[in-house]
Image (cartoon, rainbow, N blue to C red; front, side, top):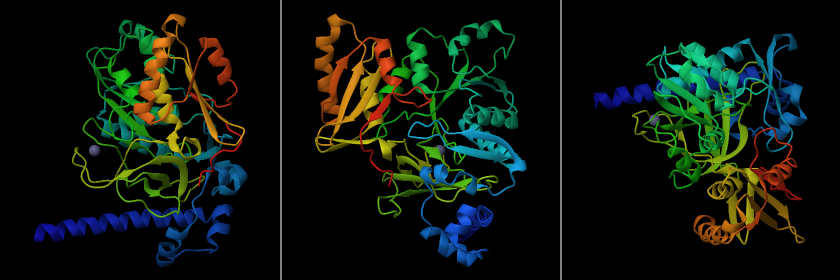
Length: 432
Ligand SMILES: [Zn+2]
């Protein structure tokens, strides 16, 4: 009985703390012309905020593109960094960071690293770029510094790992590698040797599990060359809020000090635990460009209840795809990410592409381009059809081409990331 009361007390204190952080974020957002117009009140009491928040329309990437500077809640002179999104699904979005945002970024990533098991004195190999206005490399560096880890900023050219053993660094120490899983898989297929004492790989940007929470093909291919645990992490440039996991976790934990996550259905209503919907994030303590109910465009489920690691904070499952990259073929809805996972399992050199177009009637048509030696193509086609029916319930058109031709086709997509999906449809599926 007493234990229950104490537990309820702890729970209500937790709820109160979350509400205070949310209220502070909403009040700060009123300094930005966009939210002042949207909320329509010059100040917010706690009671008013509690009424306003659930009915506030989500903020979308299109809002950020169309009203960029109206999101600023600080004077221009307070901005320390501009970062941009990758532009994978349209125009890149520019996000301002003030000094407090950089401190928040360090706190956010240090907490995520701690969850992954990184401790002071461990080595962190940052296998993503620090340049070109990307925020990820900067965030990992700041987080590792805050935690007291030793950084090697390798960048995406992981070939440098070959020389790691020649460096007078961390003899006998533990290494953690941060990498984009598909790039790491490509390097592994070319014979990359990973450092000894690799404690875990923190995988960013791509999911490692499918809708049934089983390891996807990308994850399976990585397991052939990486014996260390593969940990997923999820974050977006706009929200700078990481959902991270440790080796025992089932999904990425929400950090309740830095944000809240909602999963909404097509009618903007909350989805039940375990039911996929649009991932909507409200970060806390954002200074330069505070966001409220930011619709990431990603589709995933939130899981409540106790995690195998013992933590009770909600966890985000794998990103099943982007709302804008949902294809409908032969009556079946399929995310481009599932098609990429299918294609990846057949790509001899790691070069492949999923190309969506519209047919004469406006219906979605999908062509999968794969590089394969001519003498292996008939058998590969049969296996492709068999596996496609099992994985996605329909068979996309399969074409073979040399790697340089697939690369040229990829150029049609102006995304800055190494894209595996080119959307050439005349009408995109709207995000909402
Ligand atoms: Zn956990």
